[in-house]
Length: 171
Image 1 (cartoon, rainbow, N blue to C red):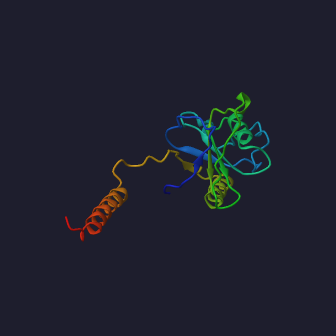
Image 2 (image 1 turned 90 degrees about the vertical axis):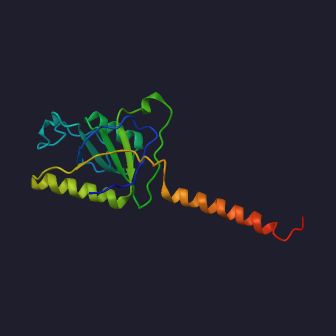
Image 3 (image 1 turned 120 degrees about the horizontal axis):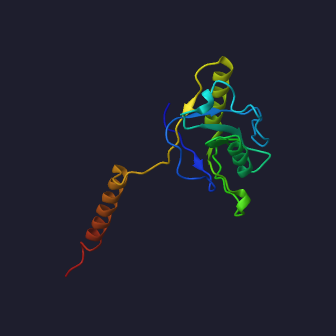
């Protein structure tokens, strides 16, 4: 539970799906191969009224765009690409038309990605409720108290500097 940071790929599709998405991890943990014909696995309820599911794959061996295309072909609403370390990679794509995808791609750090993968695999193997998540972009507040404090502090320092720099002048 909670909010976690990640980077949307430059080739991600907007708007993002609304509501909860089921988190699934394919057998090919890199997400470079076509997903099996029986994907998504049983127990997802055929995804009837549900908004969909996301695939969690690891970084490596093929392009980010290719990973997103494989997930999209399998019917995913998005793909989460797990970094190979704690640094989240900014994922770019080429400009050619064959590198476009119709789903979102999100990059996360290794620790968070491993938590998603392990929890989704454990729930699937135990036959429990699937792990769900929702995705939304960060929207900053127009009135951020920290920024307001810094602006006031900077203004006060400029005013004090001007006062003290001219305090000893005889006019």
